Each structure stands twice: as C-alpha cells, then as structure tokens.
Image 1 (cartoon, rainbow, N blue to C red):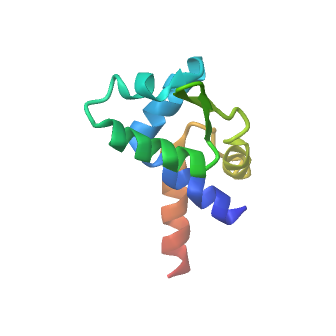
Image 2: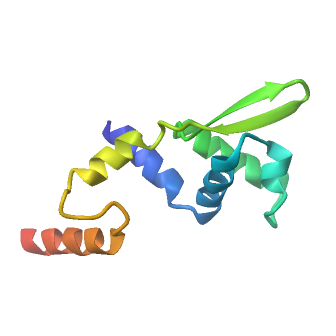
Length: 109
C-alpha cells in the first residue's frame, strides 16, 4: 500500500493534475477536451494523464479514434483512509496535519 500511496500523493502534488481530476468529476472527457483549458502542449497534457493513469486515479480508453479519460471513483480510497487514520484531523485540514508531522519529526531529534 505504501508504494500506491506514494504514487497517488506524487500524482496529486501537481496543480495541473489536480485540476484535471476536478474536471473529470463532471464526466468522462476526450484528451483534447482535457487539454483545452491549459496553456501547454497536447504532449505535456498526455504526460500528466499518464501519471494519473499510473497512479490509478484515471483510466484511459480509445473509443473509435478518440482517447477518453475517466475518473476512477475509488482511486483515492486508500489515501483517504490513511489520512483519516489520524482521526484528530479533519480530512481537509492539511495545515494541521503538516504541523503534526513537523512536531513529530522535531520530537524524534
């Protein structure tokens, strides 16, 4: 599970990839439609999509001549469970989580 979490969190570390995931919450999208709002090449978007695919966050499939992207709704389950295991933090309170980690790391010195 650690490798999976590492891969998921690495994929989520990039704001472009997070925005792509947000877009895919609405519906499946063709790769060209995913690329449209970004000021980058189709090749660059394809690299981001590859990272999201390898992390298991999306799937890509060819429908005719068009490649489509689809969000995997269960993809964040392990990461969410891991974060919730800290119980004392709200799922969205990452600042508190960061403070907790810093305190733990300082405590180990």
